[in-house]
Structure formats: C-alpha cells, structure tokens
Length: 118
Length: 107
Image (tube, rainbow over the protein chains, first blue to last red):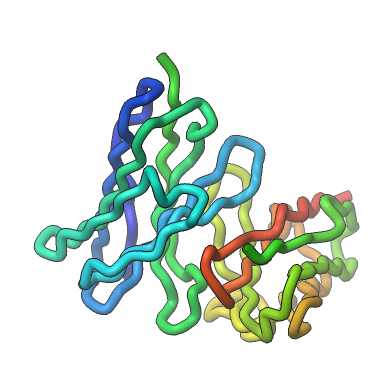
C-alpha cells in the first residue's frame, strides 16, 4: 500500500525559504507525478505544482517565481522549495500522487503545517 | 485560469436524505472534473474522477454527473460519516484549480 508522508520545519521566518520533503513508501516513484497542494486554515485548496519522476515540472503561475520542485529517486522522495515567504504562505502543505492520466489525486500525505512567523 | 464555483457553500441535511452539490466551471472542461471529500483535520480523499467515475472503495451512494461547465455530486441516503467538506477540481488544464468547498452538516 503506497503511503506518502510530508516532513519539514513547522515554523519558518518571513523572507526565508520553506523546504518540504514527501517520502513515498510501499512502492516505487518511477512513472509517477507528485503534486503539491496547500490549504490555509479554514480555507480551500490551492494547487502549487507537480513534478514527474523524470524531473519535469509544471508550476502554478501565481507561485512559479518562488517555487522549485525536485526528485530523488534513490530515496523515493520529492521535494518542494518555496522562497521569500510571507504570512500568506502559512498553510497545511500536502503532497499527493497523481492518478495516471487523469491529473487527479488518488493518494495524499497527511499534510504538514507550516507557519510563517518571526 | 479556470474558475470553479461551488454551491451551496454549506448544507444541512438529515441521515437518509439526498444531498446535491453543484460545481460550475468558467469554461468548457469536458468531463475533466473530480470530487474530493475532506473530513475535519484530514487530507482530502478522491471520490469521483472524470465527472462520473467512482474511485475504487468509495460507497456507491456517491455519484457524479455533468459535462462541459456544469457538474453535480449527489450523496444518496446521507450517513453520519459523510460529515465533511466537499471540493470539486478541474483536471482539464493548468493551473489545476479547486472549487471553494461545500460543507455538509448532519441535522
């Protein structure tokens, strides 16, 4: 059974960079899209972008200038980096596996709360 | 970007009732629509993809319909465990976008 788990610091200072890792267990990440989605407290879902196991990416235009995604197939891990943080980036960040050929998300991590505060 | 508009924003219904949630896309997305259920404090869960295909393991009381710009999620015979917020998501084009959510409460 494939499982995804986000990890990273829960508190980051304004203007700094957030780094999150999504570790996949129970299966290989080959031929696999990992999406990053965030959700501010009490609000809706926002798609940040996705990365394929080969390293190709698609980013949301609203975040593209601040986002970098990467993959380490040897560790079965995907990573998200978000720069120049503000309080508006405070949210639960999810990684989610994309169901093949559908651009929908059939497996999600439990989420990682990131608070941007000094 | 394709805007997704859900209605209502919240609904309260009794166990056994049928609940209908609608989602409208700002442009034609064919059948590229998914529905998710998010229970409090949990990650979303995929219910429906391609507008009407039921994800494996999802109870058959959940169903989806629609195409182009107008879509519906129906919960037949509402159960207490269906307390959650439901989101639609267009999977037609980037950036992928979600509706604002519909909170389903049990009377």
